[in-house]
Amino acid sequence: MSEIYRASTTAPVNIAVIKYWGKRDPKLNLPTNSSLSVTLSQSDLRTHTTASCSPSYPSEDALLLNGQAQDVSGARTQACFRELRALRQTLEASDSSLPKLASYPLRIVSENNFPTAAGLASSAAGFAALVRAIANLYELPSSPTDLSRIARQGSGSACRSLFGGYVGWEQGAATDGSDSVAFQVAPASYWPSMRALILVVSAAKKGVSSTTGMQTTVATSSLFPSRASETVPRRMAEMQKAIQEKDFETFGKVTMMDSNSFHATCLDTYPPIFYLNDVSRAAIKVVEVINEAAGRIVAAYTFDAGPNAVVYYLEENEKLVAGLFKAALGDKDGWKGARGDKVESNADALQKA
Ligand code: ADP
Ligand code: DP6
Ligand code: CO
Image (cartoon, rainbow, N blue to C red; front, side):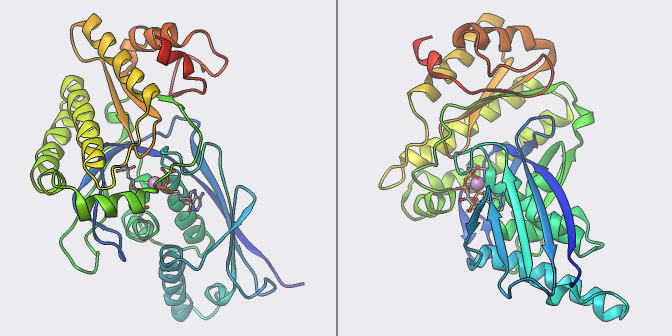
């Protein structure tokens, strides 16, 4: 029996407060604008991935996602495999005692414990976990920055899930993508009272994938150029300052405005893309009611490419924010304990709120 080499890892989702939407180079996954997110390490939303390799495996690389075989022939997955193998080959070339893992077929087994392709950043947690699991398997000395450069080629947003806390993705200028990497703006411990409430409005697979959606937006939206070249660069600076100063009012306002701006470019796409639904809009209304009641911004909604809401707030406003959402939603089993991120799986009641 030949030996099987194996390594496992987990990666959390990240939810952007300044959205990535648009590629200047679809092959290398280079974005039209920088973006910024919070890695939801405390949440229940994560990918668990085991990478293994063996000379005894069938010759084709394989990926099993939630128990189903995936096509690994796509350029994105292939780019990740190729880059990681090349790094392993460099190690093997410098030390002949190392097993020749780079030449063995790979078998990746991955599980998302939350809805896949539903606008809850499964591609982010998924490719971050895939890249780190293989890097662990190959015992690569790569830094999180190096891994973010590789994960970016699997899915753009994945580069940010390799760091914890408040994370930026610098769009970069190089045509080869060498400077298009994630960086930590601040660790979670810098502003530890940040909380995220996750409302799973629908677990269904989105109608238009992020990849397709953003490419149609770039090709057809007349709002898009000013978003990418003016609005987002200004907000990136505002957002980084808000985080440095732990200024939730600005953090929240910019978060909500950027989500609205992103969804406006989706509506301005031809044919139009509708990621938000009536329940999403009801969640926006609840946040507005909460902020009006507080007389300041204590809650901030944001939506990725799907109807599911993420609401950021500070722990000190837990009663106010979570309390009002709870009142609007009714007492549901999906409601989790007092600390950390929460998932409410039945948001139908919101519509009636
Ligand atoms: P999401 O909003 O969930 O990120 P996307 O449209 O961006 O949706 O990407 C969904 C795709 O990401 C899936 O169809 C699958 O190809 C890929 N993906 C999701 N999870 C994983 C995973 N754990 N490992 C590898 N690829 C994954
Ligand atoms: C709305 O990273 O999923 O969630 O690079 O084509 O895989 P690909 O797209 P993806 O797009 C994420 C879009 C977003 C915003 C964000 O996460 O920044
Ligand atoms: Co995605």
